[in-house]
Image 1 (tube, chains in turn orange, red):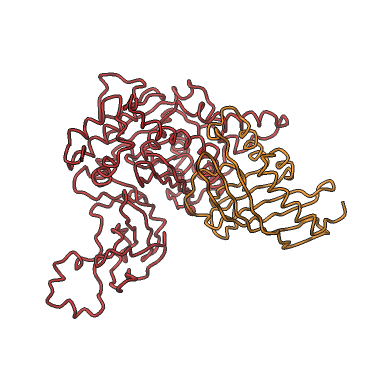
Image 2 (cartoon, chains in turn orange, purple; image 1 turned 90 degrees about the vertical axis):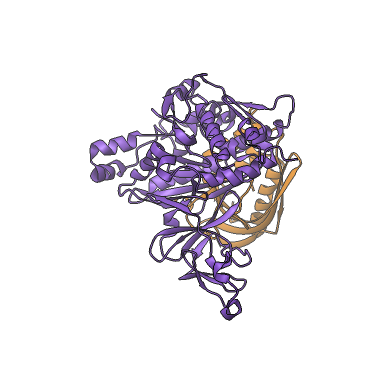
Length: 160
Length: 437
């Protein structure tokens, strides 16, 4: 792959959300590099994912455990299953480094998760750090900053 | 019609030796009485003094439903004040924490108070001349909580004069705090950032009981811990076991493991799992840490401190601490069917950062609203909160390994799958609920 166009980068980020909404979790996980992290900070403007608390800071192994768990017959909190819905603003390309093959996008979004009669709305900004592996775009880091990151939440069971 | 107010006998009858009536979980009146009596007669955890290091620093929390604030006074002592202006009731601080300078100032009419709550000034004070303001409630300033104790940094408060003093209330159970604190080579902890805050649509006591429920991990958490173990099996041979797998895997230990780990009960509703070993016993050593501990304490004592791997220690009524992980969980009642869980992490002062990294990872994996372990626990609590509305059976059973001759308010060690600690909590519940009725 030559360097991805802006449109390819934007389409990639939008496609990621679609896979989640359609419960295509294994295809979704395949979008991540082997050394990828998915990060949901607990603090506003947080810079340290390890020594400061976060809602999630998960490598691919932990993400894979989540994806496997969602399929399990004894996953009681998923009887019935949750569903989710993303509304994204058009992703903005904050930085593009073709030499290094690294691209950073910023995507304001609304995310809805439902289960039983309960429907929760979350507002967040997703920051994707993308790279090119074997000619295809991959996610190296997805950071989801909730607008109300330090608020008390009930179960958030799927991926934003 | 009031069924429980002014009826001590009815409240007492909610607790039998090995079962409790569902009204302790679902009844509005019982909940209100808990706020008035149980949470006023017991020593309730407020915060850690590292949250208010300098004079004028404050931290806001609650005792039951009542807003209080912990403040560092000019004389360096820590005060706990009810968080309302004595004038009109306005909450003085609404930020979770901050520094108020030399005095608190109410944003409504600018009444000001020293950091011990005493009245400093009222604007246009001549309007109160000869009104007897000095004798009124308002003239006394912000009301302090009468009983406050700072135990090696952990601040507790008790509203009522009823009930035992701090040392008598906690007794030998303080050994769990000692172990957590002694794990710092300089014997000091610091709160490491804000807590994870997790809202539960269930009664607060379900969470407290679950802390010493050792027959649920391999069942309720099979989907998370069991999946972690299975996914890890596919790793290439020789791969170093990641910290996350070290944390998850012991949840899947067999019943025998939990039976043998033991439970210890103490008077007044306190107790802990993991007398002999626990799910925290087999974590990898952190490079450089043991050497620092030996340098600080000597080898024998260092080994003794690190060899104590208590699992969950319950401090009645609503606190749990994990010494080997340096985290605490506070179960804050909001309504009969609503509880806010705040999980705080601590840094061991002068210990390697990797320990804090593990503490934060544990908190994320187990205690977050995004935690796959938390999801299934909450699912169980919420199902119970609903199921308890069945009239055909109105009792919750806590009979596992019950002996009809079981003593109350004693220190004892027993099989790690007993529900004695739950019975111990309900005996304390009954005692502290009714002592001021």
